Image (cartoon, rainbow, N blue to C red; front, side, top):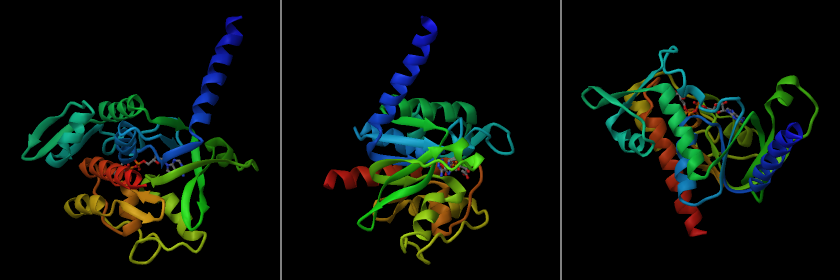
Length: 258
Ligand code: 48F
């Protein structure tokens, strides 16, 4: 019966996809623009990469542009990445371009998945796997389970590297710092906390602070700003794209060495 076949097709292929993601090269937490860009370049380099986002629609803060005006701004430095993702852009001032935020988010996701990254939506990463004083994977649960406060244990996924791309909350870095007596590579050893808005400094610093903050744990995007205590920058997205590319390059280099 077609009714049974529809269900069987979904169940079989979903669990196949999930089983293939139990041992990853890279687990990316958060499906915001920086994390999706990272997923694309990592997958393109032939690495096993999966991205987990707690929402039904990954894409983070990119869909909404600014104040729900669905346009975003990028600067010259990020144009090569925009071209890699086939996103259309329009110059409106010296070195500044606008793009449709819905087209941009959809294009990022499309290309990441087509490059070989697996995206899991409705997954919340509630903890990390921690072995030999290093982050070694993620602990995941259904978002609705956590929202309902149900007493249900999570599942574990191993990864050679974990990327915190959770945005302003930098949840994974906070968790790692709060547990295990871990000291992050920051001024305070913990999450310093994001500063108020300054576009120029914020855009430069988010890329500079994209790094490995603890063995096995990398940070990108707004999480990198929050972790190192640099300014937010608002709806200019070049820094997010460049941060995602940088974290991918760092990880590719690291995994090549091992
Ligand atoms: O915040 P977000 O869009 O990440 P980003 O790549 O980009 C920031 C910009 O959108 C914008 C900005 C640009 O100038 O300031 O804010 O840093 O997306 C973060 C994603 O992570 C998910 C969340 O649902 C969102 O889609 N997320 C957060 N915590 C978790 C998580 C978690 N513990 N588990 C799974 N997903």
